[in-house]
Structures are given as structure tokens and as C-alpha cells.
Image (cartoon, rainbow, N blue to C red):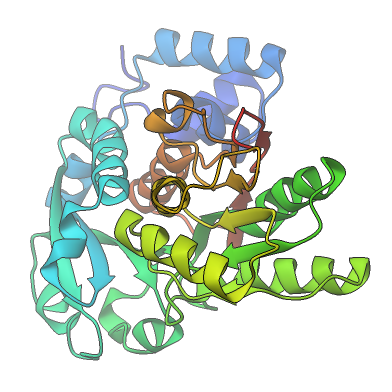
Length: 329
């Protein structure tokens, strides 16, 4: 069923029939954000009544635009495209795009190359871009003609909306859990220094250590398990009295556990270990890993939906992160 013989139902039609705002209808259809059960029922009924199907591909063809959404990932090498986190972003975006007839492509943005977005700027098949591992320099390099068609998973700007996890709050929950369990000599393995979103947990760690009158013990990391393994050895050599290590990625934390075992330290008996992300493997290790949740799928769905919807998103949308306490800490 359509609202008129000459056009399909629109999101505005759904909102009108349901008696809700356009933003509420959009959230219900996209499955993101808050909406009351009553609003969800009204919107669902309106969608069924009108036969509403989001079809940005058709709209793009009419206006001469593209029908391909690009997930563009900044990294020091193309190996960043193999990251399971990136795969989850692509898969989640595809769940939104495929029913709408929009393809999803993966693109590497070489770190330090401010012109790396120019190729996408000139590609008429591109209807939108999701930036991953975003830096301020990358945001400044977004071509003017791409603005309005770019969103970021990570740091954003006045012209590029940001969707990200509240990793500062998630890190605070983990660190307070370590403190509450009696740990007082807590080290941290960070993420890459060039990545702005990886600095929020570091700032949180420093603030909490200062508030508790505890020393800072920071080791650089890169989200990889191999770095976590070597960082564990470094931590034991530099601080033999260490009783906890917090790594801001689960992969790094699992590497930390391996490194502690290499050195004969018990987890959590001698050293508690915690991570961040709550990857599937985190609950299946021995001991199972204490961590904080990271709703990558929901974030990617929201980012892709904002692009396909064609309406400005909020400047910053943060998704909550919660403590997942397990045996390692």
C-alpha cells in the first residue's frame, strides 16, 4: 500500500499516521535509541498499514547520487582492515544497507595522508562514508563536497557527526571495580597514542589514580595481544609489587594474561587483569575476562542509519558501556 498512486510512503507519513514525531519513528524503524513500548507499537502498525520500506537507493538514483556506503578505516597499514572490530562495523552497516539496496564497501585510509579521502570524494557511486579510527587531522581533510555524507565512529567535528562508545565511563567502572576488590597498584596498557578516542580512558585512569592517591603506571599499547604479552613482562620488571593491569582492549588484556603466565604470575591471585570490549572470547577464557561492554553493532547501525536517513544527526552520540565482572578480576 502507498500513500498515493504516484509515490511510496515516507518516514513523515509513518510519523503522521502513528501520531509520533519523525525522530521517534526513525528510532523505532532503525532500532536505535529510546522509544516507549506504546510508540513502538504505533510506529510498527503504521509501517504495516502504509507498507513503508526505507529505500535510500531509489532516492539516490533519482537525484543522481551513489548507491554505495563506504566504511573508511584509518590505519598505519592495510592490515587494519583485518581487525575483527572493523568486520563487525561492516557487517552491522550491511544489515541496514542491504534491505535498502545499498552496497557496503571497505576502504583503507593510510595514516598521515591527508589526501586519502579525495578518491572517495570523486566517486559518484558513494552515497556516504563512515570513518573509523578518526583523528582531528582526518576530519579537517574531509572534502567540502563530502560534508553531509560523512559520519564518524570516534571523534567528530562541527560538520561530521560522531557515534562512539562512552569508553571513559566504561573504563571508570572497571577501574572502580579493581579498587573495590582491594587492588591498589594498578597499571594500564593504553591504545595507540595517535587515536583520540583511545585517550579518554587514559585521562580517566589518571584522574582516578590521583583521587585515590595512587601512583600512575602507564604502558603504551596498540590494541594487539602481542603488545599485551610484552607489556605484562615490562610491568612486572618495573613494578614488582603490581597487583592489577587494565588494558583498554580485550585482545591486549588476553595478551597480558599470557605474559603474566609466562612469568609465573597467577591471575587473579597475584595480578588481576581487566580489558575493554567484551569480545565473544572474553567469556570463554580461563579465567574468564573482566571487561566493559562495547556495543559496536548498535553504534555502526546508528551511523549507517544516519547516513541513509539523509538528515543531520546529533553532533555526538555516545553509547553506554557497562562493567562485565568475571573471574580474572
